[in-house]
Amino acid sequence: MAHAILKGLRISPRKARLVVDLIRGRNVTQALGILENTNKRSAPHVRALLKSAVANAQEKAGGELDVDGLKVQQAMVDVGPTLKRFRPRAMGRATPIRKRTCRITVVVG
Image 1 (cartoon, rainbow, N blue to C red):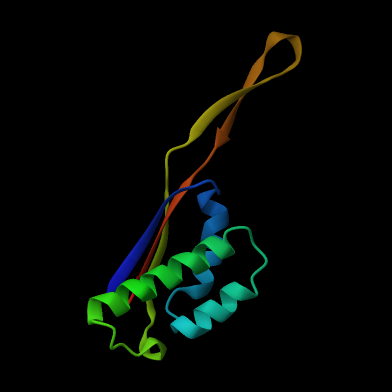
Image 2 (image 1 turned 30 degrees about the vertical axis):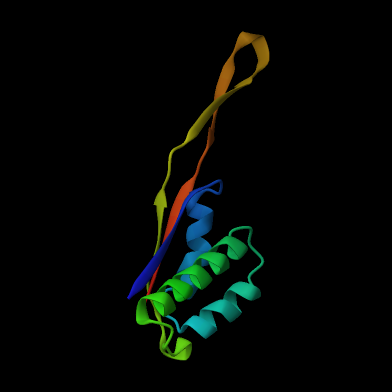
């Protein structure tokens, strides 16, 4: 069992969860194929993270690991720190802008 974590990704957690939910519990080769054809902004980041988790599993096993036998055991998106900005509005007012970030964790085994 090996994992990889991506911290501080400047995508809303709600939008990243849409992509991560597609690969949870699937075979690694299936998950990579799904991520190749997913047209979402977080898909390339999740694909790179999945490849990193697979590389970590191979390194942990000493290089003698069958990649086809690996499954995505856990894939979760947590909320990261929010950047708070303000936008000027009419009559001297200001409204808050919340630029959300997320943390993605992928565990393969």
